[in-house]
Amino acid sequence: MTEGVVVLAPLGIEAALLGRAGRVRRTGIGPARARRAAAAARADPARAVAIAGFCGALDRGLAPGDLVVATEVRGDGPPRPCPAAPLLAAELRRAGLRAHLGPILSTTRILRGAERARARDVGALAVDMESAWLAAAAGDRPLAVVRAVVDGPGHELVRPGAGLDALRAARSLWRAAPVLARFGRAAAPRRVLLAAPRSFCAGVERAIEIVERALEEHGPPVYVRKQIVHNVHVVRDLERRGAVFVDELAAVPPGAVVVFSAHGVSPQVRAEAAGRGLRVIDATCPLVAKVHAEARRFARAGYTIFLIGHEGHEEVEGTSGEAPEAIRLIDADEGVPALLDVPDPRRVAFLSQTTLAVEDVARVVEELRRRFPDLSGPGSDDICYATQNRQDAVRAIAPSCDLLLVVGSGNSSNSNRLVEVAERAGCRARLIDDEEDIELGWLEGVRTVGLTAGASAPGSLIERVLAALRGLGRIEVEERVVAHEAVRFTLPLEVRRG
Image 1: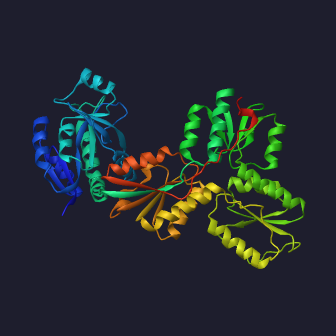
Image 2: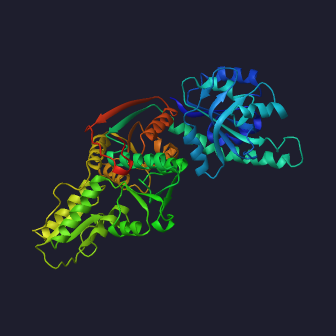
Image 3: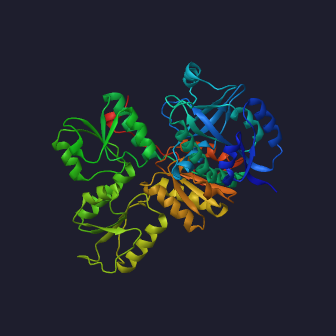
């Protein structure tokens, strides 16, 4: 029967510090001993191999006691990638350790002075004398390489105070041992079920393209009120290109270009922008704009409007602003209040936030209709097609999964609803911004992982998660498609070409 992880450590002191990781094999120092140890360790029954010990820093940003988690190890042959490195580094950080991601260079001798500088120039973070040759022990098994910085630029090994630096490195290595044990327990071959559709919807693609085109045509800065879509990766990318995200228009200089987010804004915000002479480009999703139009229509007809949504969400704030005297918010989670008086029970209507779970809206509407038999609704379902499709896709795979991962940011309503849909189907589910949010403990004993992404999450994040999972063992990927999407929305005139 295979075991979790075997840890290869060059020095006796390193092996002793790593004892809590499980079975540790002392390999000896240098390339020759590393090659012999790797050949012997290939027969070890462990599911995964970890290499750990001390190292010298090449990057000046590293300090004694920091850990370097190798994204690849480089020696005298082809580099050996370590695709689980982001998972491992994040787990070490959650344990309170300073962990850095990057290449580790293995050399045949200790590097000093100018040699270290040249090694740093090729992009390696740290240097040792064994990892590249010990990596052969892994074969096709998952591999992790973690080294604790004991010296480096400005922290030479032989100098006053070096003993304290060595203690810092030793302590970090000791604290890393339980994380290596978790790496071994999480290592296993798996099946991954990909839900489809997933990731960006047409409204999100349109909103991002609007900001990109505004930057191209006007140059930075282009101001955006609120997050253009609720995803930290999208926001960071646009910030790097010159977008400036603000909470309110007061932070935008008079006359500047400002983009309204996909979630929409109230008429009061539009009036404020006009009063300050701002050049507005509206990225409101057309499906959200449809809800705004319905709110105005019902309000003009004298209806009391029950808006099903989440208090404080930008979409709800924008819709409420269209008819503040007529709209009453019904929290999608809490349901219909016990006391609900209206001026005319025969003139009541409901609308909903576009990103809610279909079941939640249906439950609230059923209760409202029980109390108000004349309840009117929108001309077509307010829940957007993309929300519906992504929820249906999760329902299709959740019963077959031990764990379902939803890629999306914590403030993304549609992503959070996907987690809830999976849990209602009896599947354990977790929301992650990217692969670094995956905790190794979640994967222990898990043989089938479901994977999807909210409508505001880039598809590239799915590929990053798959790469990290491959770092824990062979994966078999199967996509299950419940719908095909071909929806496209036109761009506003301000950024339309041709």
